[in-house]
Structure formats: C-alpha cells, structure tokens
Length: 160
Image (tube, rainbow, N blue to C red):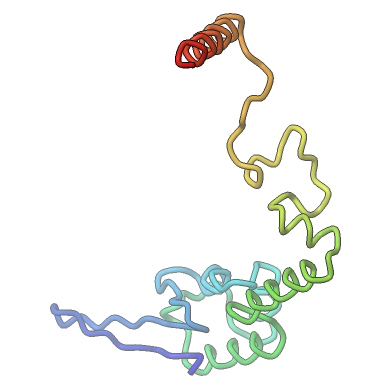
C-alpha cells in the first residue's frame, strides 16, 4: 500500500487529516509543490513537470488536494521516477558494483575520499575527518618532547 490518507482523532475531538505518499508524511500546511520535494529523489524541476502533467495547481495546500489528484500525482511519480527506497537501493547497488570491479571511483568510495575529482590537499574535511597536525611543532613543544625522550632513556637504563 503506497498511498494512505489516515484520519487521526485527537483527545479534543479535532479531526486531523494527514497525507502520506510513498511512506513519507506530507506537511498539511505547506503548498503541494514544496511538500512533494520532501520525497527523496523529487526536486523542484520534477515537481513542476509532475504537477503540469496531472493538472494540479501548485499553489494548493496539501490539505486542499483531493484523493483523485493524489492518485494522479502518485501514478505519474511511480511511472516516471525512481524515488525513496528504490532510488536509494539503486545508488547503493551502483556503488557496490564500482567497488567490486575495482574502478578508480570504487577505490575512492572504499577509502572514504572524494570521488568526483575534488582536491584533497586543502579541502575535503567532511570525508577526511578532523585535521591532524604532522611535523609542525613549536620550539617549546619540541623541547618538551626531547626532554621526555631523554628522561625515558635515562629511566630505562637505570632499570637495567
């Protein structure tokens, strides 16, 4: 069951209608064009084409859209686009295939580095993680390290 319109009754006896499409709850107070972009794989360009194909006004709020219009929208989305779980699954399968064949992009995915040719010398902090300073020590820190090394050497010789 891909489309469900549920009726929830609160303790205050207020009726609240929630629209769900493809497992995602659409916000009732928002316009239908914005609400459809909450679906994974549907952006603004796709929303415009879907609404023009179905003849639904983009300025309508989600709570004003009828059942028939929801069914038309859902039918167009299901036939023309990969969305939500199907799209996520397809992307993961493509990445898995790249890893298995050992392509450059697959190796970059395995190592957790940028895939599409971005520079990594000065950027890519999201993929590479927090900075680790290597080889850049101030004189005071260098002196402390040397002092610790000599103290440990003296200690080990005294133990022998």
